[in-house]
Image (cartoon, rainbow, N blue to C red; front, side, top):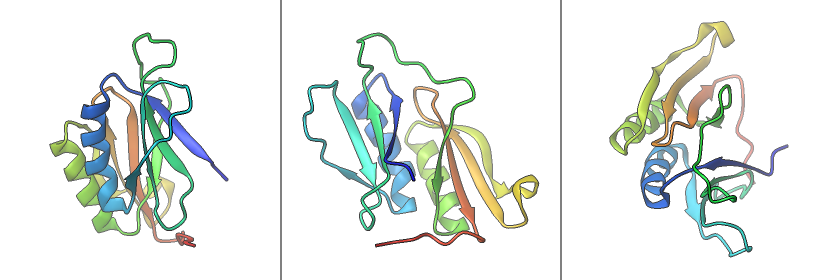
Length: 137
């Protein structure tokens, strides 16, 4: 359904460390970005399915980046353990806590998630749903 999601960041190297750490336990890897005439960026994806892709971009207009009020990117995890590992790794890589790993029963009996803010304040949700099967390949 989704092709890609993009967030604005202020420092690619710092954001790269954060997203490498937070998305690695989820099975996502960084991929090379082909120059397309746009601003510098980094990209991650599930290497099995290739899409969707997640981009961290320097703002196109050259102005400061800002986190959207009410916006969040949620990444589906293969297990509760992957959520917990990704959350801890994201904290160690400069992210901030916005909700520790745990069941979120208001979303369903098997909904397990954690929330982080990346170094620029973008909200990241790491979630495992036992009722959802990850389709691969």
